[in-house]
Length: 291
Length: 291
Image (cartoon, rainbow over all chains, first blue to last red; front, side, top):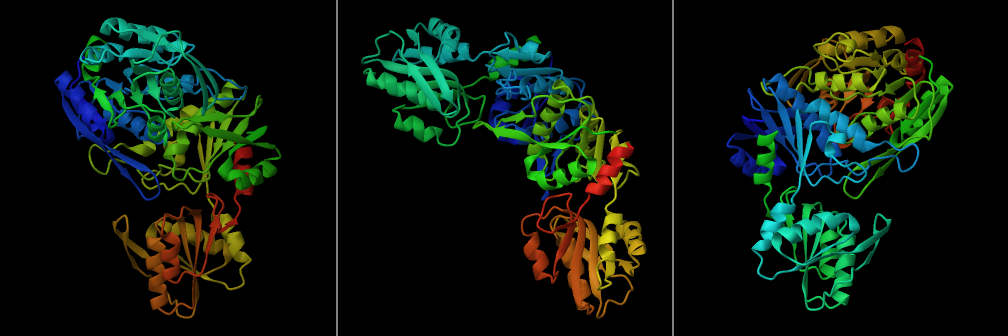
């Protein structure tokens, strides 16, 4: 898809401008005015033509989705032909079934909304469990991986870290990064007993004296990474860092990581955060052009 | 429409249960769990049948609309036949055109969402300007007036207040209440220079020594009512109170009203608030039955 104009929600200005630069198109901010009664007024550029892409990162999504839906509809009214969405962090991908009878299957409902609003929905490392492809959830969805960009970043890292995934689900992904970067890797076993209660069993690899890089797709509460960091430090690791695609960082996560001995966090720019060091714009631009 | 089950968002438990009682149906709470990452998990009763009505008051709407959309969709998946919405305060009814080129026409966009989600949308005193009927905005919309219930309340008030509307738009509405309650009334002239800058010119009625009841559809910032109260006090009113359908009460509104000499506020229960004294359940129930 050829893009004529990128529109971004202002909290994503920096990564959005990087994407516009890769796409070689103009970038304009979407102005959101909040009235005293809590309603939002969304203003786009005065006229649009051709295909546009809206850029937003959908962490803490509920209050963002109404302005996003308004922007998508307004873009068409103002003359846009096709309207794509770049949501490098996509929400509501976890609730893919009713775990208890009566629960809304948010993933499925949210997917139908996105298909109604957009002609293409582009994201990075969507948190998919029981579905194999994002197109089962969002017909116009495209899910790219941060793994090649993580591998490229690690190739430039002289310390040759040992990569460690926190659970079996990360096996293929961590293996791919390790293979491309020429590094050792292992995958731990994780048992989750609650939102904030996680147990980690390390794999049978020697971490003594090693520089360990914990690798995960999302850093939210930080409990998984903290437990893993404590485990590798107990086994004698010399240094523990962490690399994630999505730097969600719930309240308290930074302190928790620091207390567990994680020296630093390296994240992709799918969610704006001080730890962003891996830029996804080239990958996003390629996926847009190929669609 | 016959209703088998009412489901309510828990902040509206009291008025919702009053409506269920009028409708003679069961009422159950909708459970919303907020994950640490800001996503919402919505849980309804384990099974539903027949027609249901969901009750929610849509002030400060953005964060509420996602759980509401999930609930509407989940209700159908769980077996509901028709899904109605009782939103005694309805949001996004003011932005009925693009006041500046580029603006999203929220009223129109939001209306199409409601028509997709619900079989009936019931509200009270929707803030409509340039459209005559709510069905131009929401095909399945029904808009009832709090006026008859305000008139009934005022009939029981021995002080025989003079009713005063703050602007010409309120003429028909205040006239209707005054007529039904057998009270004098007048309507002021209002000029709005900004969100918080309002000028009120009183009508040619004698307020000296009178008990004045300012009547409006919505009390938000409180600036309009405060300016009107100051004006009638300057003209010698003995007592100033205020009666509104929707007690929105933006931050600072209560202090502003107290400072301007408003003795008390009487509101309908379309938005839960300590000033609620006029119960809309009978009117809502009648409209549901007649649909």
